[in-house]
Length: 109
Image 1 (cartoon, one colour):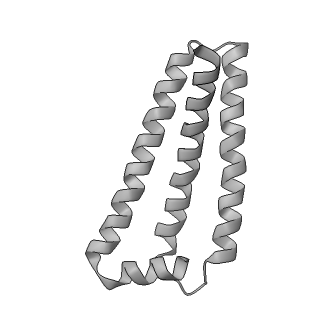
Image 2: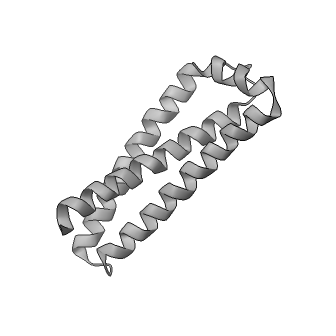
Image 3: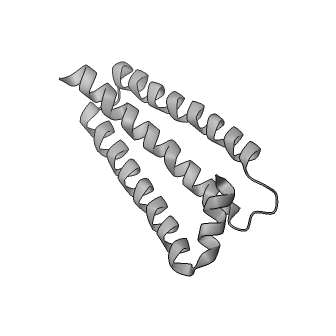
């Protein structure tokens, strides 16, 4: 799968730019969502600290899984390994944003 993505990015600079654009979009939406949701939780107290800890714990677990997938799937001769790694990091932030939205929906509605 990663080799197919790498070969696709090697075909043209437009394909490479599409991957970079998707990664930036995932990062921007995820970080923006995390920022807005944590602002909606309110000031820092015991309740919000527990919620933030759950979000960070979920992101950390996802980070470990994504790093394990990256190490096991990516060949040492891949040309765009940094872009794939950054895409996996963007997915980690996306998981954190989705989990924050779930917690917000469960706790505040």
